Length: 274
Image 1 (cartoon, rainbow, N blue to C red):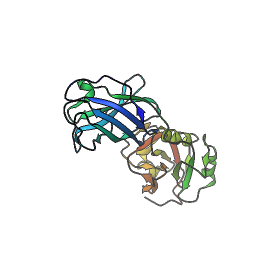
Image 2 (image 1 turned 90 degrees about the vertical axis):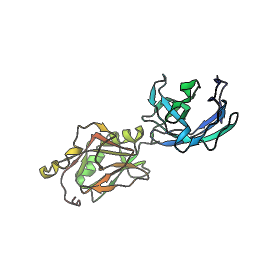
Image 3 (image 1 turned 135 degrees about the vertical axis):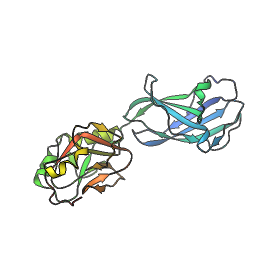
Image 4 (image 1 turned 120 degrees about the vertical axis):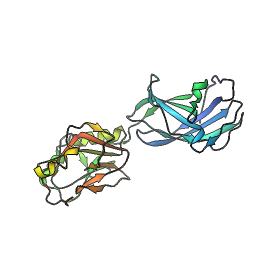
């Protein structure tokens, strides 16, 4: 563990002295771990009462100290910490999006009342480099049916090549799906930014389908709160698609609608009906 340099500690009932820390290398959008050792330097005990009482938490700040994520994940203390006692805490830390340089500021919080820094305690502030969520930009395609020559040609024209093996993400397509040339790049950009599931816009040549596919129309920008399932999604390892409107789909958290990543559906033959 990395030792913490000497720092000012206030006098009073609630005070903390940070002693040492160890932080797992964070990747954007994923939950890692931090190991913290600290001492109760005040005159009152620290007690966690379930989700209330004294908790370990954190803020993500930019390099200038501006808050990016204020309310970090809470971690309860493993036991009552009396004045003068030390405690080691294994805390969950959710890394922010996008990757880049941040400052991770650990603090104690008396839940629903105050942060310890608001009563004069110094947070433990550590510079952290958040890595992209994916270590390699390798996208494969899973076909739900037999791809047609036009579809294979659309994949061959991608800005970033589509691979067959050792992929970190897999996009789910159906016969007649023709991705735009920048489709693979936009999906990989979103995965690198920190999203586990990414779905793009879906256009169709069939007038009868345009109305029900309207929510997935192109030009909607990027929306992490998209209220519909993602269609023809790209998924990181560990995720599997469901089905919606007869197409591969994904419903869940940690998902982004990328309206600039367009797939055009030429026809429905060879695909199950919705």
